[in-house]
Image (cartoon, rainbow, N blue to C red; front, side, top):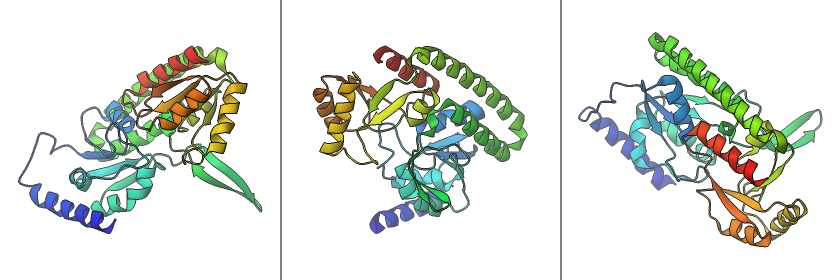
Length: 291
C-alpha cells in the first residue's frame, strides 16, 4: 500500500507540472468528481454540460474493491468538489488518499441526513448502536430526490450566476423522478410483500420503498457459507422462488450453484447503469415478470 501511495503522489506532481502545458476544451469548466456512474447522471441532469465530471469507478468495476489508478489523479487534483456516496468500499479505503491528492477540494457526503439502512441494530443501555450501512442509496427514488437537492445547492455555490438554471433543471428532474415512482408503484401494486433473492444485497432501498422483501446470498458483505447457502435454498423452496439476481460485476459461481439447488435461473442486473430512470423501470419489469 505504501508503494502504491508513493506512485500516486508522484503522479499528482507530474500532472500538476504538465497541466499548464496541455489543454483541452474542458479546461475552463469546473471539475466535479463522483464515485459512480449514476451520480454522473444526476450531476448532468442538474448542471447540464457546465462541468467536467471525473468518474472514479469505471463501468464494470466492483465498487467494493476497486483500486484507484495514478492516471485518475489529474482530475482529482483539479476538482472543486467530490460527491461521495458515503459507504461504498472504495470510498472507505481510498478517501484519505483522495483528500491528500487535493486538500482544497470540498467533499460532500450524499448519504448525510438520509434514512439509511443498517445491517444490524443492538441496544446498548439507553441508546441503539447501528452497524453496517447499506450504501445503495441511489436505487431509491425518494432518496435520489434528496440527493438531487444537495447537488443543486453545491453546483449553485460553484456557479452562482447559473443557479436559476440549476434550480429549474432540478425541478424537471424531480418531475421525472415522481413520474418514475408512479410507474413503479403501479407495476408492483399486486406484488407487495413479494420476496426475492439477490447475490449481493444491492436492492435494499428499492425493496423498502416498494414493499418488497430482499434476501441475499452474501451475509455481512462476505461470501456465503455452506450453512447460509442452505438456509437461503430452503427459503427459496418454501416460497417458490426460482430466480437469483446478480450484479454484472460479481462472480457468478456461487449464484450458479444456488440456481442449480433451486432448479432456477440467474438474472443479471446492473444497479450502476448510468441510464438511471430506465434502469429502475427495467428492474421493475423484470420483477413483475418473475414474481
